[in-house]
Image (cartoon, rainbow, N blue to C red; front, side, top):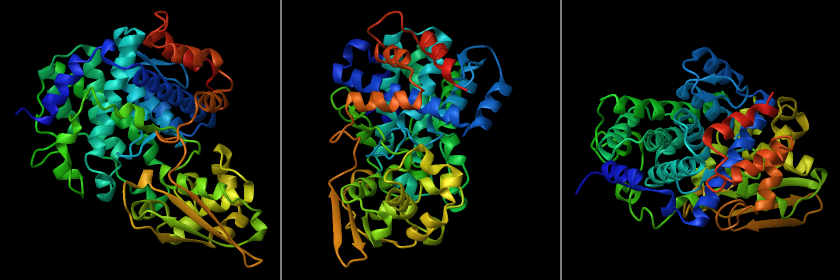
Length: 451
């Protein structure tokens, strides 16, 4: 039997717009819309200006558009900036099984290479589906395995997904696409060490993955070779980068029949997905902060290692990014403010002493750890000063396939993030059905409201 990468490449090359069921195409449009809105919100906040400036400095032939500025640069440079923009506020989508930010890699790679080659809307949408299936399946084959090794699954799996996207849009054959996947694997990585210091390197991981995947496809097209055993080989992605067992065959099992594109969560909160279920449970029993004596949150062990530990860092975050990965602080902020929004994680908000004090009274107990962390149930027990206890429980966080945001709720999120760009929303949602909407027309229309 041929290798997993070779079979994945065969599917990538053979997939056509007619092979994509309507619900899958609709899901891809929804996620691209969400990603564009997230990029515009990041551009307005200036949170990844360094990546935008570096992309402009890299320059190159004017192949693709930087969404924050409208600058035309090389496709790899544009993907670097745009990947960072989509992920800059940590408000972008997440696939629970793989714990990957799918659109932050897939959208920028598809837009950049699509604009470069003059792809129409149907080709752009097809390439995006290729990317969504690849990133979700590669990561989900070893649930939490990359994170357990200290690596960001988004960059590990995303580099291969971007290579698949680029290969599809460049029209590479199956053999060359397999080489592109093999080359991309050598650029997979993304350290989680930012959790220790509060640094913002995680914002850069999707852009690095998108850029390196595009470069891998170009190198393969130019004759470079990569190992077709990049996934299951003795020194491949899973053996080298995952701390847990992997089922490499699951990457290609049911391709074209089971669609992971429809199982990606759209975030209602701009923070780590692993604590959303706790915030949803708290919302069920929200009370005034002054009435609270203690909060006890039941948390999946894989989530706790990222958003609850070490306790001293999580109680009093030092940076905005620190706070986005602190369950105790975010719980306290929701109690104080009544909600968690983009402005919750502004630095002035993060440094509020009253929130830090309440955060010190948020305690974690571990659940039995069944299932994947991002799709776990949530429970909080709010102990009140009058001696009573209010308990909130939810089976899973909002926004996922079993509790999706409605189209109206998604549009409201997009309009809030994009300063009311309903014209842009209509264009994204018309991908593949309106021939006037192409990769180039879409990419070049986005920056009009970015600043």
